[in-house]
Image 1 (tube, rainbow, N blue to C red):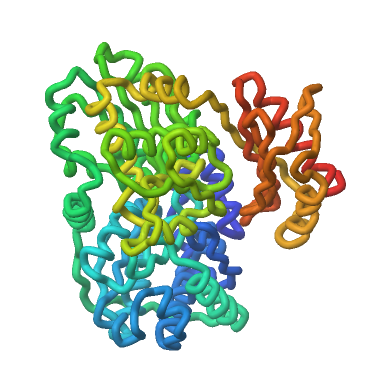
Image 2 (cartoon, helix red, strand yellow):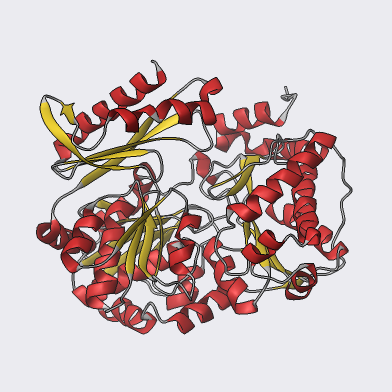
Length: 542
């Protein structure tokens, strides 16, 4: 007996319960996506607007958000135009907009809706097809385009669609832009309009991978010839898990085909094999198997998310999260490649970088969570140019490279590290920690009542910074630690006298409190987590 569903959410629940059995229900999702005209709340978080396909991410709502962007263009607001890096709407029409998507369900169809509406207003468009987020960033600069619209929810599960907007410098849109899009889009949503489809008359297809390769060649941050020589000449195995995402085929085009490079999960699969397509430790079993079975001297494994802006590394000995790889990247780019500048990281990342910068005399800057906060250090005329920028949630870019986080950069940089140092990544990391200190970061969190989400939760958690000032003694599993520093860039971060720390901040998108911690021993993490949770629960009255 065939199943019937009253809405897309219930259909997705059935699909995700058994992806292999119920993938035949995707046409039902498409029907909801095309016919559902219910409005949605539009919020551009740290990386764009996201919603469930067929529930709030529908064809009508994508038309509304696109129409809101067009209205923003036409307003010619000085702050928006300055943030976009253009003079006004006429320049946007001439410079044009790149539109593309990752490999999500209905990606091309949603892109055609966007292109049709842009073309109706006389705006030049390019269609990128399936492309990775860093390719949009590079493509904007190479084409001197006004902006890009990338339809991706990044690493979210398969039931999500997304909408990223990047201005003319290629970086994530800042609040001057996203706040105005939200304001117009939500005003339109309140009117609940049903907008007609405008099919493109024609569109120019653009190869963003080709532009990315040219961009990388011009910037010269990476030595591609050294990377190719290493792969061709050394006893190595490199395993790349694309998790059915838009990064598939990219490494082959950048450094060439090689039997030493193994690619996993490159097939079309809108449901990502039923897993959350994120670069998490639990998703790395395939990589671990390849590396374990190989007798090669050099072993590298990487897993990428669907739009290619997040990456996690591993070798035969350990998984290497961005907290560690970011510190390795800084050391490598500064010590081995000689790049000057500052180190930039989000406030929730490991203090291993702090130890490296202190000993090497490199200025350190810590920002709020969100890659867009790195922009001031990545633009060409920045008074302080970043050697590396990274966040603990697997995003990285480097000196003179894209303003977007870039998993392809993360792969290539790791290979060049091995080529130059003659070491596997874990050996290089151990050398760095032996010299600068050992650090053990992690993250967790707790859910809270939905009524607390947003400003109420922020207000309740703010009492932590009032209660725990510099010099305060804190009991951590029977050991007294003194608060050495209080950092309030994003939430509250307490740094203790032994270099361990904890940070407590509300989620920007969910009713959750997030904990970021770092201990000086692996065994010490549990006690720091317990302390962070105790502080948070007391602050919110649990």
